[in-house]
Picture 1 (tube, helix red, strand yellow):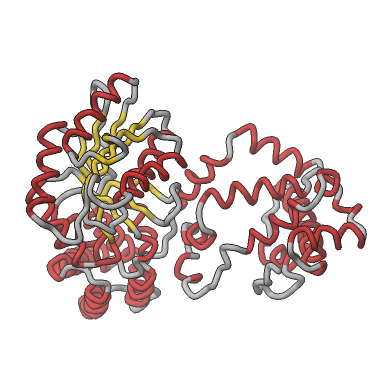
Picture 2: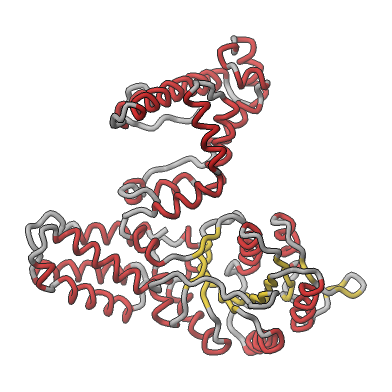
Amino acid sequence: MFEGLSQKLEGALQSVTGQGRIDEVNVAETMREIRRALLNADVNYQVAKEFTANVKEAATGEDVLTSVTPGEQLTKIMHDELTRVLGGEHEGIKMAETPPTVILVAGLQGSGKTTFCAKLARHFRKEGHAPLLAASDVYRPAAVDQLKTLADQVNAPVYSIEDDGEIVEDAVRVANEAVAEAQNTARDIVIIDTAGRMHIDEAMMQEVEDIKTTVAPNETLFVVDSMTGQDAVNTAKEFNERIDYDGVVLSKLDGDTRGGAALSIRTVVNKPIKFASTGEKLDALTPFYPDRMAQRILGMGDVVSFVERAQEQYDEQEAERLQEKIRSEEFDLQDFYDQLQRIQKMGSIKELMGMIPGVGNKISDLDIDEEAFTHIEAIIQSMTPEERAHPDILNGTRRRRIARGSGNEVRDVNQLVSQFEEMKDMMKTMQKMTSKGQDVDISSLMDKITGGGGGQSRSPR
């Protein structure tokens, strides 16, 4: 996500980082590099021009020129301007005073609209709401079945109309009756999935307008494929002129290494980005926070989002239980397995590492095997509860049985047990050092895990 843009912006900022002062000459040179980076990232020309002009004006002010740390100051100016371009403040969904809250979702076919509807239902369920999905995409083959399949995974009902097993092609009726169904069944949110087309056409626009007029939604969202760059921005503009939507959803943002759509769309259509979809899984949806996204683009990480994801998986009691097991040296392979499960629910490892300040751009070329945990889990699942609790009883016979059961080699089982014991030693060391108020030497601890390999990564198998 924004990988190419982040690297180029970091390179442009290096020309002033570490210098004693910023002058108009090196600011002008830096702005040229930044403008080129933005245009290469498929950012709208006027947006790129205005962005660099605003940064240059702020950077050449008297306070900045005499700053002790001009490089850091310029980075902050860049962050503030990126935040402004991305929308400034986070804007959420406008909820109805009297339920249900009705959300109309529109977009081109292939933009990820139907999947987003299921993701949004999951998002609201996590917040304690009871969503209902309305299948108003009545033309695309199997569209209703797709929505039902996805809805089953998030435990949300779908309202559709069928006659003798055939889908009734009346999108307005489906939407209108779905709202009534929500009122009758105490569902406080209705998410209406509308039909997409391969391109903008009159019939599509008219149908969405008719649904909007009939159900008077509290929120109309436009889903756009961020990987299509300026085409996405142009489509968003045309849709907005017809249906005047309330917010934008950027889908497939994890595949957008350039960032042109995200950086252009708010300025061009003057509508906030409300959600970002960052993967195919139904939990890969996050509210869009402009300031956090600006931090990630500049390689500053996103600690707040990282902590929020961790808090979703760990409550205070669980954290205390885990801490006590580590303190009493009772942390076993079952606990290890449980923690792997929680980590995977937080998102991809590379994405999580990118949220850590100073790490994002340094791992851009790192090939992280997201399936590495699968082999570890298979090995642990092939163990008996006693073996998970007491790895020291794993003799040769047991290890051969576990290897066969998990589809691995005996050396893989040996490596896992060895690394687990090293990790326990590391956790014990950290516990002692922190209890004494000492700083933890991360480098030496990493050497201990990797066998003194200078922090080089090992194969998980």
